[in-house]
Image 1 (tube, helix red, strand yellow):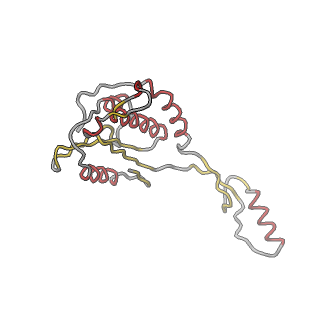
Image 2 (tube, helix red, strand yellow):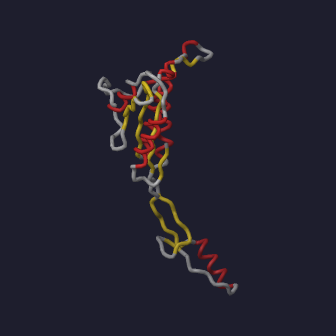
Image 3 (tube, helix red, strand yellow):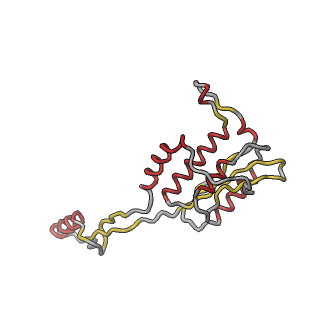
Length: 192
């Protein structure tokens, strides 16, 4: 299922600062270069490997001649799927010391979905967000908030803003379906 009533929206103001901090942290996880040492060939001489090589020659021991270092780009290849409980139990209130800060569990889930999306979007990893609830064992509602091939944007934020609690928590079928969706992803690593 996908919401027909969702309207494109921005990230809520109360999450802007946290989202900015998380984006910076996750941007550091994007594909970056690393220097591989003790290689047979490479961009430049590896001083440590060269000194070990000269020491081995001076003591009469042989070594394999790995004298270079090479700069390579590390590729992250990860797919992640987040499955959120959207059942009626999320309609409960979370109490705090300050009555003004009281909120519903669904609000906490919504904020978590926003922050999860902002973070993984910054890291350039493939991700999907789905929610579930059920009427009966045979009738499980599987909500698509963001699919793997879809770009994270204001439309997806609108779908997240539109989530609401309803029905029951029958999670078996939803977990099996989400696992099947994740298994179809060609990524080297997957997380659920």
